[in-house]
Image (cartoon, rainbow, N blue to C red; front, side):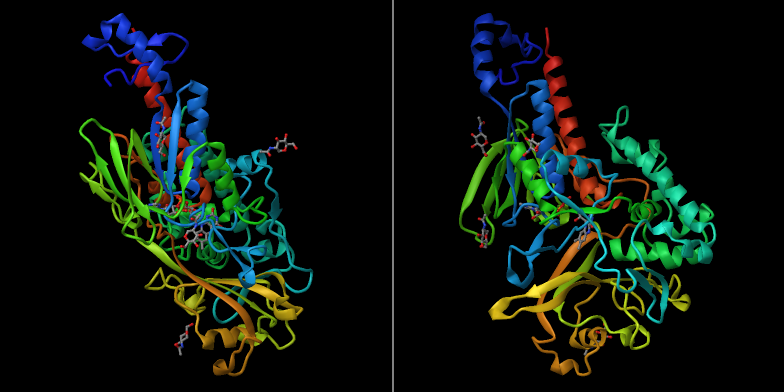
Length: 519
Ligand SMILES: Cc1cc2nc3c(=O)[nH]c(=O)nc-3n(C[C@H](O)[C@H](O)[C@H](O)COP(=O)(O)OP(=O)(O)OC[C@H]3O[C@@H](n4cnc5c(N)ncnc54)[C@H](O)[C@@H]3O)c2cc1C
Ligand SMILES: *[C@@H]1O[C@H](CO)[C@@H](O)[C@H](O)[C@H]1NC(C)=O
Ligand SMILES: *[C@@H]1O[C@H](CO)[C@@H](O)[C@H](O)[C@H]1NC(C)=O
Ligand SMILES: *[C@@H]1O[C@H](CO)[C@@H](O)[C@H](O)[C@H]1NC(C)=O
Ligand SMILES: *[C@@H]1O[C@H](CO)[C@@H](O)[C@H](O)[C@H]1NC(C)=O
């Protein structure tokens, strides 16, 4: 037992310089045994962060010749966490994203993984040339509509209405993203403290201010901020510019190369787990994490939903790859550092199919106008930066997207319908549905009007209040935590980056443990 850390690193024998270890015979015997003793790592959560941790741990430890044994515990019955799909009409062959739906070309981890695993990506395309592609609704009128796809700033109409603000926004966004991308590279990567690296890269300047202040400080006009940028912070984070910090507001404007994995983004994470050779337990909830005096951990787990079956397993290190506050884990003893509770947005996602198009009357258009395929929202002038920055305001919802045509073939039918997704802060009622679909009587909405509906309430992402310090990566010796990055930027990519970063820190520390004992 005393010689467990003996490892072959760079081809020579390395052993612990404890008194007992100076017995050659013992060293040789134990070396043979220790070659098979891997680092046992538990990862709690099979979302982007956990899967990426496993994938990069495997890669980095292989590079260093460190044997590794990863076990992943996932409470849900699926891999992906908040990246997950449901079947339209209940048909798994017809999946639609229920959570995270889009990533962009600067998301290196996701883009590289999609390539490595040969996953096909699809761009976010327009449905048809018919009618406007996108409109921004303030509850009274459309403040902006766009009739063709492409980058948001390509449109001449933007310049006509907002002058130089779009150009300045792109410039600021590119400068900010440029700083962020340094987090992937030496000498910054891997970072031991998110607060420190954010500060070193000048990104705390953006996180310290609200989006409203940050844009104002950078000379970007109020009208453009309110009409366009706020529509983006609302659809992406369900929050307004006087709340969300400047960095997250910039992330919302970095939309180049928007894409998704055909069939579901979760496939990136299931492929990562497969490539990590991890043992993956689905439907398995971690109940308790006990730290032993020798520094090892005992995890107690059970079949999700049952209280009966308990499993116990010992690990050298543990990674908590989901929000601490929702993990419901009993840590014994409490970690040296307990993360602060984070206010998460409660987002209602409603997916439904209908033969009806959106009603022009619901959007104060004339009866033969076409409603934009994607309706984003902002606040009207009077409510501008109102007293409740969390507020959805008079639009009543954050976004409505017509995702694609949908053929309902159930029960011998063959009806062309549309698949819609709505983001809102509360459940949608019949009055709301009847209004947007142009139906006279809410009481009379039938299966003929709305043929399929799926509702989900997510703790989707934090309210991104301005701040300059971020959660620790290590809650205790050997206990790592990924979700602190969500208060910095909350995306699949940043969770993946945190997983990669922690994997690198872990492997570096194993290596220095060994080299520290080199004689
Ligand atoms: C509606 C919606 C839309 C979004 N849109 C986008 C988007 O377009 N693009 C984008 O990049 N991001 C988007 N996001 C954000 C994105 O989903 C998250 O930032 C990202 O998926 C977080 O990944 P994670 O691995 O850190 O956490 P999660 O995906 O939450 O994974 C944590 C996992 O840990 C598991 N777990 C927790 N506790 C335990 C326990 N005790 N035992 C076992 N398992 C446990 C959970 O079941 C979960 O699977 C969206 C989110 C939502 C909800
Ligand atoms: C690897 O981890 C599993 C738990 O998932 C454990 O049962 C097994 O003994 C470990 N293997 C080694 C060689 O440590
Ligand atoms: C997980 O549990 C659900 C609900 O009990 C079940 O339908 C599903 O088949 C389980 N999945 C796995 C992989 O065990
Ligand atoms: C992806 O495709 C390439 C070329 O077709 C192939 O060489 C590679 O093995 C494939 N990778 C996976 C993970 O399937
Ligand atoms: C339905 O929802 C709207 C908000 O979208 C709300 O104003 C209205 O009071 C609700 N109606 C009922 C009957 O609950």
